[in-house]
Every structure is written in structure tokens, then in C-alpha cells.
Amino acid sequence: MDQEVYEFLLKHLGGIMNNDIASYHETTAEDLTLYEWWVTPHRLDGLPFHEFMMTSNASNGSVFGAEEKGKTRFDLSNLLIQRYGDSAIASYTLLISTALPEGVKVAAHNESRVMIKLDGAWKVVHVHKSPAYTAPHVG
Image 1 (cartoon, rainbow, N blue to C red):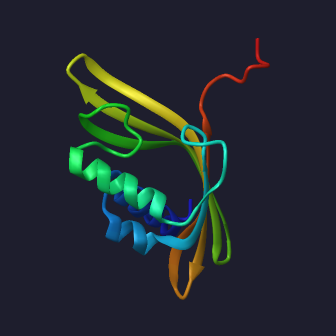
Image 2 (image 1 turned 180 degrees about the horizontal axis):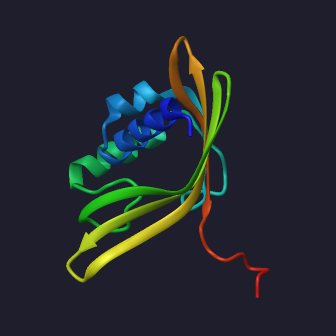
């Protein structure tokens, strides 16, 4: 595993989970493109969408991607990092665990993040998320 890209990815995701807009800006390209299946079936462009969500989450004590409020953590299942010079792709299943009074609830979805090293610093330039459930054609 490419340790440099792995540590960058953890910093990037940690910033999002902590509603840290400064960290998000530091690790994300301004011309970010992304697909988030649970938000809209269309591509989202730029940073304002997540800035709004992170600001709103921070004000009410919730975590981005968690279905309910509570202590959370994230894990990257089946992580694969493919690096090609100053470009890298990370693909994994994101698991967000939330401690609730009735027990731990885990939300999961598949993600791919494309990262480019620009002027010596890694930036996420594209994200694609898809649901982590059995496909309809599987019986």
C-alpha cells in the first residue's frame, strides 16, 4: 500500500467527518466533481455543496454520512490504492459506525476517490459513491 496516499486519504476523510472546512479545502481541488447516489442522480461540481453540509452538521452536532447523531467512527473496508506517478485512485467500502442508545448502527457505501498531486500537495479531484447492497439482478 502506498503510505503517502493512505495518510493523505485518512486526513481528507477525517476532515470531512469532523466538519473541518479548512482541512476540506486543503485536501480538495476547487473544481471537484462527484456523484453521491443518496443526494441526487446528477453530478455535483465544486466545494459549496459540502461546505453547506459540513457547516450545517457542525452546528447541530452531526457527522457527515452518519444516519443519526451519536459517537462515530469510520473504517475503509477492502481498501485498494492504485498510484500512477502523481495520480492515485482509492476504492473501498466506507463504513460509518454510530453508537446509539439501542446499539451500534453501521452505514455503508462504496467509494472511489481520484487524487492528483498538484504543486507538491495531494488533492481529491473526483469522488464516485454507490450503494453497498445486492444488485437487483442478483436473485
